[in-house]
Length: 134
Length: 150
Image 1 (tube, one colour):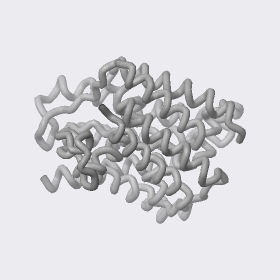
Image 2 (cartoon, helix red, strand yellow):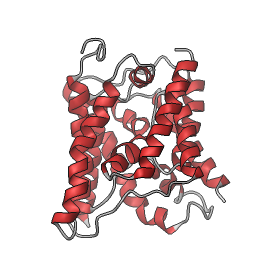
Image 3 (cartoon, helix red, strand yellow):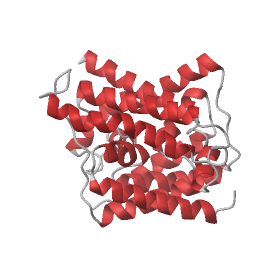
């Protein structure tokens, strides 16, 4: 239980470190990618997928369970209108502010208080989604 | 290379690899799939009695997802301590950050994932719906960023 908690914090810390060193917590860098001025974001996603893909694909075939017990989870979303509509709305917001959910939280760690505006917006947006959900 | 990466490319690739290590470590040891948008919904389960937030899947996961988010902040702080590169702030107006943020939060939760959930975890799972989501939000973001003035 404690070990799983420690690993979860450590994994989050690596994620936050990676987002920070790759400047993904700077909205201008993200918007620069979206405007075709700097392909950096593609390299960040590509690098992350290059490590994660073999682990996600091979580990569940090689081992019956995660090293600390439990079961291997799976990212699985139904392909429906909700997913496409949500992704489109997310993309529009992302194109406006250049901040996605991870960096909005991560920015706190470097004292970037400007990102609190975006963080607050995301918190409200998530509430609205739950409030309006059928 | 210079035209594609005017600010260099090593830190982008290195950051991506470190992110991949974090997501992989979480999966290998705990089996958890570490996207970053669910925490916004699961954390509301502590404050809101709305049935949507009280669903078992959110209540069950809210603890580790919050810890994972605490890790994000700690990782960024470690970088700040090690390099002295703190938050540079942004020239974007608060209004723009809030409006964009509300759409990001609403859309990512409606679509069940964001850049990390669909983009990294979903694509690494070879999940077709995630590929559709990534192409959709990338397309929408490209168009929006072109239309909205810098």
